[in-house]
Length: 84
Image (cartoon, rainbow, N blue to C red):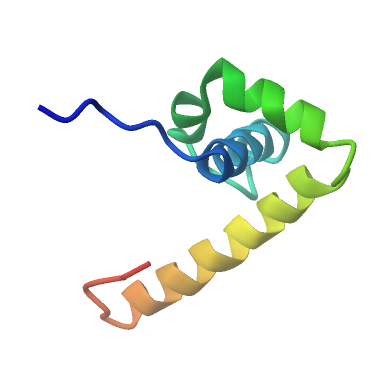
């Protein structure tokens, strides 16, 4: 049996930033699952990464809102499947 694999550092980092954006801007960015995927290590990693990208929480909130609006508009037009 193959042991379970961990999420990549990039996945943890993006999940952590999405979780932080969800907390900071709940009307703009909703992702109830992000914190669970990131875990405490991912959240801590994102705080360390703030030194390199200080506006990442805001950027991820806007990016998430844009993609959500795009997907929701497509669904409203009758699209039944979204592939990421």
